[in-house]
Amino acid sequence: MPTSGDGSAALPHVVLLPSAGMGHLVPFSRLAVALTSGHGCDVSVATVLPTVSSAESAHLEALFAACPAVRRLDFHLAQFDASEFPGADPFFLRFEAMRRSAPLFGPLLAGAHALVTDIALASVVIPVAKELRLPCYVLFTASAAMLSLCVHFPAYLDASAGGPVGDVDVPGVYRVPKASIPQALHDPKHLFTRQFIANGRELARSDGLLVNSFDALEPEAIAALQNGSVVAGFPPVFSVGPLAPVSLSAGEPAKSQSDYMRWLEAQPARSVVYVSFGSRKAISKDQLRELAAGLEASGHRFLWVVKSTVLDRDDDADLGELLGEGFLERVQGRGVVTKGWVEQEEVLKQESVGLFVSHCGWNSVTEAAASGLPVLAWPRFGDQRVNAGVVARSGLGLWVDSWSWEGEEGLVKGEEIAEKVRAVMADETARKKAAGVRDAAAKAVADSGTSYQNLAQFVQRCRDGS
Ligand code: UDP
Ligand code: UDP
Image (cartoon, rainbow, N blue to C red; front, top):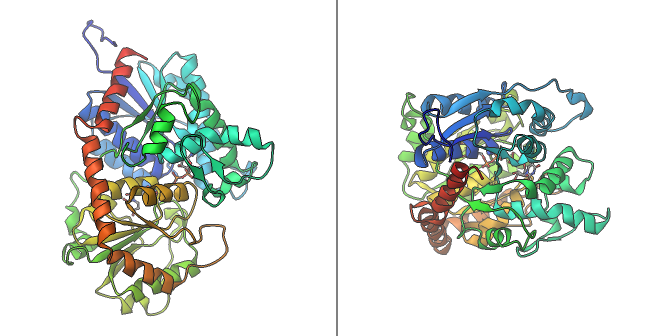
């Protein structure tokens, strides 16, 4: 048990080290607040400036302003020459820059009782913590199904002796079809693949894993990780989700003042389709136009967040031009389209929203689960097809697995999109199943629930120094 200078019991000091991208930062912020306010920890978050996207800067600023108990630790990266990786994704480059700077991280850990690092940094940070004899945990920012794939993948590759990647049967979980394997993993030389394999191999040396999921959402994957079916002797896996959103708007004008929120509040119950493909990737102009045609033809109201560039700082495209002549005028009144950041958490809570057309970034999935909002899954990239599989299995929503994703030929046509949107909007069973997932999520995070208890157990281990 950690003690303070006067011998009394001190709060366990936990340092969090996220990597880049909102998909990683958001769950770390949520964990920081859950540990500080719900479980009596002293928490510091390591921060690398400048961030890759503007969304991350705004998020960090709001976090430290709204939650003064969470301390900020500035982490300065070593010089990094990105020209070694021409054309690489800017977020993967930041992962690499942070990975190469890992040895500099030691001094920030003075006085810490435990470290929680990001999956993208695991293989380089675990050895630093070991050297310091500091317990090191990893927050896995995607689904438990994806975690099981990450843990098993190195063994799969070893057994396939350099052959092409096909379906991957994760022991104790299920078979991940070849088409759902993240695009990069088919290329052994890809920067992401090298990081992914190194991280997957090293996880067994961590002191434990935290995953933003809950037992009722992913029973097979969580049980298989915990009972050693995926890898024998794997460290403890704490399913602690869905981590609660953090209110970061203190001091700002009420969210209901924003145009889209005022509009949403004025629409009838369950009449609006919310469409968002997350913060990470752009969709091609041709596919955006088909989606526009599909939403228009569906006849439903919609709120659509359009992203046409990878980096928000680069986005100067004109919406009218992007979506085709006359589209915005034709849907005026029943469709709201924005390129800006929306408060997704608030959107998902609105009664007027009846369906979430989502790329299935894991945070979006957990937010839909907590709100009981049916999802029409349209994964585009990376782990999203694995996550969409969870959506379909758990009853949270539906997934048309023939719809293409990044790197595949074939546009999904507007008529097909319209038809599916209409079908799911009219599907009472889908609505009830999603509500069932919401009830299970609420149960998991209640005081006696599995996720709450697992997080409490993790904190106890930090107190005990294990
Ligand atoms: N998000 C948001 N507003 C937006 C876009 C995204 O609040 O306009 C939030 C969303 O609620 C989620 C996170 O940003 O918490 C995105 O993470 P996710 O894992 O869903 O997808 P990614 O952006 O990493 O692909
Ligand atoms: N990931 C992983 N190992 C790594 C890096 C990432 O397992 O070395 C996971 C990560 O949690 C996510 C997926 O791989 O589930 C894709 O990562 P990326 O950062 O591209 O996606 P994002 O979370 O930013 O949408």
